[in-house]
Structures are given as structure tokens and as C-alpha cells.
Length: 311
Image 1 (cartoon, rainbow, N blue to C red):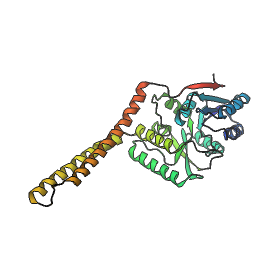
Image 2 (cartoon, rainbow, N blue to C red; image 1 turned 45 degrees about the vertical axis):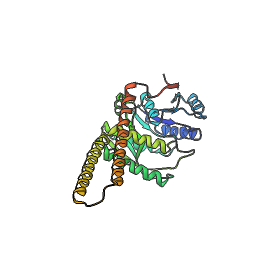
Image 3 (cartoon, helix red, strand yellow; image 1 turned 90 degrees about the vertical axis):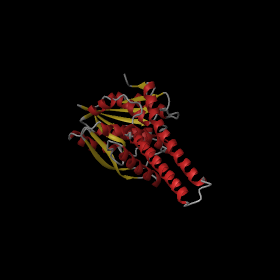
Image 4 (cartoon, one colour; image 1 turned 120 degrees about the vertical axis):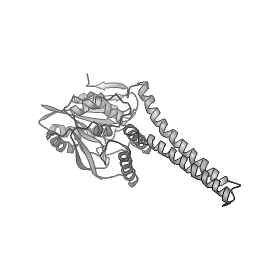
């Protein structure tokens, strides 16, 4: 009998933990032809999230809990879940129930038809601000413009993945993982699954603007070296503009086109423009160097403080 595994990261989700378990469990019990396991990853929550998960795991041996020593981030939580799954089909889903677990049986049909990755594609996004919708749209446009691998628009981490793909993802040694990009990068047979994304069941989003920017940075830097090429292009443009200013200055002096005695305006424009280019270039290069530094240190992506029902 085939087995399905749910990976559900949790970060300050005491308000939704019980409801999330019941809805996922109802889906699992409705699938007569599959065994199941549910892996909750407590990503350093300091509220009652862990104690609720402990109670659930003690009453249901199909529930496994991984608890981090501190908050390491959503992508690290999913990465830990991928390492410990034992199923043939793995479903990654958030705890807030915006991505309905009741859709999984339909995704399983696509998996049984031979698809290795079934990624959720949002055709409607309820309860999200215009600002978030706009920034998400711009993020995917920018990412696909810079990346060598096309990453589907309007997608998140909600997806069903075959065991073969999970094994490949687990074999990748990099630390700053942008998983939705990696699932596209590895290839295999992939197909979208359109659905309507609901509002959060309870609580507040755990992805404020700061974390969204970090995720965007991970995505762009992990899948593109084009920003470094843009730095080179900006350098060439700066040199060209400087030469044009120099030629204009010489001709103005020869033909008395303008009184350039002061020269303050052209000097300040040139200095500020070049300074801006240099600082932006250093920032971009610094981001890549920082990622290299993280990889060279070889620190673990996360630290597990406690495991329940996991041998």
C-alpha cells in the first residue's frame, strides 16, 4: 500500500494547530488506499504550539513532531520535513489552512497519472491586500526575468511531490534553499493544479515584508547570476556617460558654448551617479559573497531540539 506524507511547518500557530490537524487527518482517513503520516515542524514557537502538537502526537502515532531549538525559517522547516518523510507522495502545506487540505485527493489523481510534481497555482487569493498581490506579481516577474529556470507564477510551497524528487532535493548540499525554485530546477514531470486560496483560519501572517524581501533575495540570488552581469553593464554605461560629459566639457571650452567656470552641477551629477553605481554594485556582489560565506562555514541549516514518534 502506498503512503502519503504531510509536511506542515508551524510558527506561533496555537490558534490553528488543532483545526489544522483535524482537517488533514480527515483527508487522510478518507483515503482508504493509502497509509499516511503527518509531520509537524515547530519552527521555534514560544507559545503553546509545541505543547498542542505533543498532545496530538501522543494520541496519534501517525503524527510526528520535529521541534527546532529556535526559529530557523519556513524554508528550513520544510527542508527538515523533507529529510524525515517516509511516504511515496509528499504534500507540503502551510498550517494556516489558506491552502485547503481537502484538495489533496484531486492532486493524488494527477500523481497517479504519472506527474512527479503537482504544484498549487492560485487563481484566486482571498484575504490578501492589494499591496501583497502587487508585490507578489512583481516578484515573479523579476525572478523569471533574471533566472535561467522558469518558476511558475502565483505559486507557493503548496504542492504534492513524488518520493524520487524529494530524494534529489535532499541530495542538494546548499544551505540557503529556495524550495519552490529548486522543485522547478530539478525538472521531472510537473503540472499545475489551480485552486482558490482562502483567508487564514485564524491568527496573523508569519510572513511580514521583511521576510518576504528575504525570500525574494534568496530566490533571485540562488537562481541567477544576472545581477552581477547588470553590475558590469552599469559600469560600462557609467564610463560612457563620463566620456560624453568629458567631450561636452572640452567642446564647450573650445567653442565657448557655456560658462563652465563653476562646474558644480556637472561635477555633482557625475559624482553622485557614479557613487550610486558603485554602492549598488558592492551591495549586489556582497550578497553573493555572503552566500558563499554561509556555504563555506558548513553550519547545519537547523538544530532539532526535540523529536516525537521519529526513530
